[in-house]
Amino acid sequence: MKTMTCKQLGGACDMEFSANTFEEIADLSKTHGMEMFQKKDSAHLKAMGEMQNLMKSPNGMQDWFENKRKEFASMPDRD
Image (cartoon, rainbow, N blue to C red; front, side):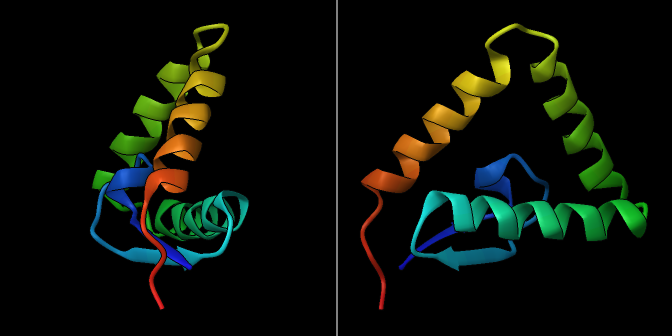
C-alpha cells in the first residue's frame, strides 16, 4: 500500500490517500475533490482550475497522469 497527499495529486490540502494501485488512489482523490467542489472550498477550486488548464494542452493531462503514475510506482510500500 502506498500513500500520497491531496497536494501530491494536484489538490490543495494535506489529506492522505492510501491504496495499492495508482488507479485506486486517483479514484480516492477524485472523490475528495468532488466533496471539496460541493463545499465550494476555495483552495480546491483554485487547484481544479489549474488542472483544467492542463486539459487545454493536447497531452497535458496524459503527461501529468503518467508523471504521477511514475511517482506512485517509485514510492515505498507502507504497511
